[in-house]
Length: 116
Image 1: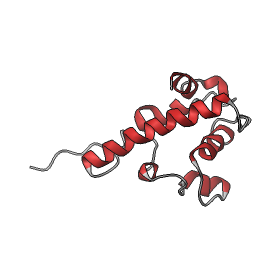
Image 2: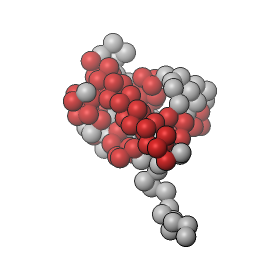
Image 3: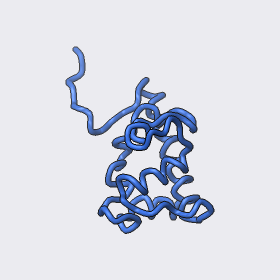
């Protein structure tokens, strides 16, 4: 998992200056569907690639190619396996947060005052 976390934060994986962490720090930019088991639909893959459903490793590859402007990782690489394992761990934490609050949390969402 440590290798996956290191890679998740590494902007040198791509040419856009972005790392996975650039969009997904503290689980930001994950849609509520991230809590669903893979394969499932991901809006970005559908909108930018015409892909209806993806597995987690495929979504990682998609992010590598599209927002990060990188070459995809070899399918049998240690790097892709590490990123997939690390992201699966983040997905479990995201699922737990969703179950605890009844909804997925998005730290980028507007803050609202609690109801009296």
